[in-house]
View 1: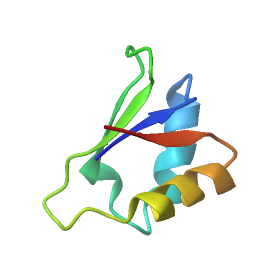
View 2: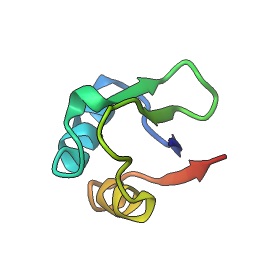
View 3: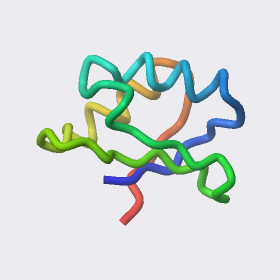
Length: 69
């Protein structure tokens, strides 16, 4: 599962990872800030978290997210 975000720096990624940690540990996610979409990808072994829950948690942290196909 891959999300487009508006993260811009390490502080942004830390805040987002903290917000989504209840859904999956931080080690289960990878950020690519070099990508034009500032992607957040789920790379964990456990079942994939619900996309709407992930987006909601990110938005509650003050950022934007949308699912990339």
